[in-house]
Image 1: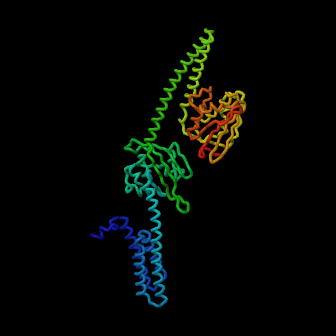
Image 2: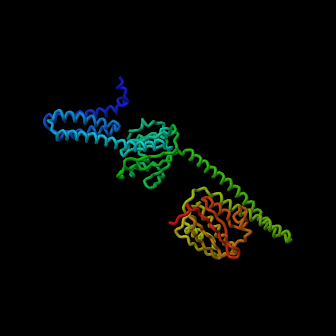
Image 3: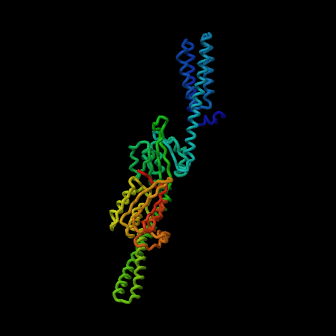
Length: 464
């Protein structure tokens, strides 16, 4: 009963292995003993390598003992059954010693291999993201704790399964998924994913898994990559899965809120614009009816205030879209050329020396450049030069014109929200640039020209 409860004997796989090793050892030793009886001593001893190698691989801790036991049986039977002389006895002992050495070497190599496998297993097991791995035949070889919690399927029910069994907990059917795409690029799994991004051997995608959360579905961000052996041959693949359902729903809710707020602000702007048009009509009628200088001066002040309101409405119209889309890499030279081709040039010439320069900015960067060019136009400049300098790891992008410049006492409020400089929108330009950590300031000299310096952080620019 005690032997039957031994952990090695209670597992069917372990019992099968022990039987294989025992049968192999018995056959090898029996063949050798039969050979000894018939005078054959040089062929059958090679059969003994098989049980020794198998035992060392399957049971590295016990492998050396098994090798010693088999070698001892071989040595005793050879000495008893073969006529002995010094050479024969030495050969038998040397061969038995080789058996033991091979058993030790195989056991050490198996231990090292299992240690490496254990490190990989532990790495996958304790990853915070749900992760599983398959071999090149699509058999599951790893199924970590996080994916157990996500799917409700313990690893013992998934390890060793093939035929796309790993897809069932997510999609409700056996089918190729992203991990199969990573291992076999021509797999049909790509049709399941609308947007697959590749970074070297890594593949990423966002997908809806209809079978998760009791059939309520979930949004998953998944990544898969190939596994290689030392010879760079594909031996499997690993897939990591993150539940981003709450993030997707939150982002969707924010987008809906932004659309509603944009619609509301549009209604308000439209109403204000109509009231302003009505106010301008009254001012026009008033300037015709009255000829009193004091009254006309009063009407002019009212018109200036109305102009300020109109400019604020125009800026708010542009400002509502800022930050609504993710930043991108934008070529400065092409962006400036595009802006200059669309605006009323008004006698100004723009020269940009920014070829190959790209900056990471909000997609509304053209609006920021537009306001800088319009600022130079409004000041009466006839030329604007754009250059850049790299220093201290960062980059400065310079807009320099030949206008009258900006007075020192006006520089502090130049980028403020309440600035009334007609049509310049410098506050808007600053806000667009600030989204990706870019700053702007003015350091020109009055009487010489304006000089707007845009400071881009080291990670925010590249030369292509």
